[in-house]
Image (tube, rainbow, N blue to C red; front, side, top):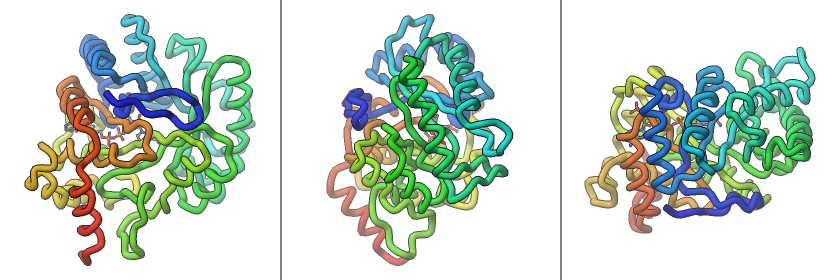
Length: 328
Ligand SMILES: NC(=O)c1ccc[n+]([C@@H]2O[C@H](COP(=O)([O-])OP(=O)(O)OC[C@H]3O[C@@H](n4cnc5c(N)ncnc54)[C@H](OP(=O)(O)O)[C@@H]3O)[C@@H](O)[C@H]2O)c1
């Protein structure tokens, strides 16, 4: 397993990170022994970063991860998240502190390595989507700083989802140490320039802006929630209906779009579409760790084997650039 520096945190994280969200679903809906065996195997394979959130399975992901890591007596890095209601009901600092205290109890920890703001960012609050403003994120950051000073968290970060202009402003203004960015074969705009005809949200190379500021980048959605397997069927542990992030109008559209990357497999650059997608993410030098939402142990093994093969060859990346430059 390759390890990369997570920005100025100084932490060294495995390039493959373990996603404990509801999309993959193992840590939410899985069978308890399967959770333990899969996490144990992940650690054996060298994975040292586990990503969860208070809202995944309404606390279940944290509870299960806490149990499994305690059982395994595992010394790994754990990141979790706080989601604000995005209303005026409660002061941000109060909400942040209450959420983190509850997360620590569920995780059976006195401290998390990384606490992140889960809400996407926008020009102004949009409570119906739980999007918050950059100013809200600054306030959440102040509360995170206090929690770090109290020894309840080591580092803190923000979410690189939401409106592009707000995200660009946030990266310049917020002294966060990490950011989670959506990056995949379908939408690589957080890592590379895309033309004006690009059909999805253009993140305007957010990952570069973030690393220029010393932030560590955690890539999310590297398999587009599963669409980059090229198959519409979902695993029983996985979320039945995945809402795309910054890609097609629905999951089926993403699956159809994903098939245009089959040429990477036909040309022998990768053994499967999943391998191509994962190695594409690892090809971005700005990414410290690429999370994969895991549904079961059978998905973990190929993901780790793909990561071991490293970034895609330069020739494959050139062909991808040429494909994107060509008119549809
Ligand atoms: N900050 C945020 O707001 C945010 C948003 C999204 C995700 N995240 C984080 O990122 C993590 C991963 O992202 P994600 O869960 O959205 O999606 P993802 O990693 O892009 O996709 C996960 C899906 O990929 C499929 N998959 C995984 N390994 C596979 C394999 N070896 N072969 C075939 N299919 C495979 C599974 O689908 P099937 O089981 O149906 O095959 C799984 O549900 C989450 O757990 C979470 O920690 C954060």
